[in-house]
Length: 288
Image (cartoon, rainbow, N blue to C red; front, side, top):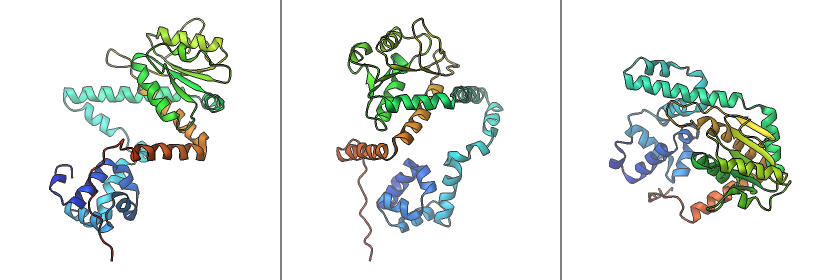
């Protein structure tokens, strides 16, 4: 479909692009829902299925439903990994890297105790402001968590907000606030200073790191220990990301309808201001 999309009529192009961009949704949604989201008639999807060599729309959708729904991954086994290991040297290296990523995520999530998660969510949701800080490579994790998490809780703030130190943004923080700090070995001096500064002001401290004992004077209220083992010279962050994604899921659950409405409002604002590129829409089919 990717190879042939440029040769399709406009309506079929729009449908094909939607399927390529949203394979999971396409695999799960009824034909009318998919057609409505694309802005075409259901017949366009039937024609696209036929163009791709399928007898029906359902036959066209079945591979997407089977292959792209992650709920079934645990049933699919590790045959794909064993197959990689039995191929050439490059494929064997890929298998080792993939296995390491699986191990890192599994260990990080196994160490994520529900009681600690429950307390962390309580601290975040009850805080007036929840600051998130990290430096260098870890900064990307902090940015993502704050960018997404603020839709669940508007008090989540990334620090430092400007070029400077996180302590600049913590000067007026108090016991009604909390701090999420992300750092892995070699530990950031700036992040350690921020954690000490926050504890002096009575903030609750949530630490995400490869150890819960990283420096004197750093005593987190809650620590999520992650695996960072990598097969390259730098730390692996997939475990940390998995932990953050779980926290985000809990935050949106705790935020309820207000969080969902806030997320919808953010999305609408982005669409209204042209934040996302949109292809030209095909002409709507006139329904008689």
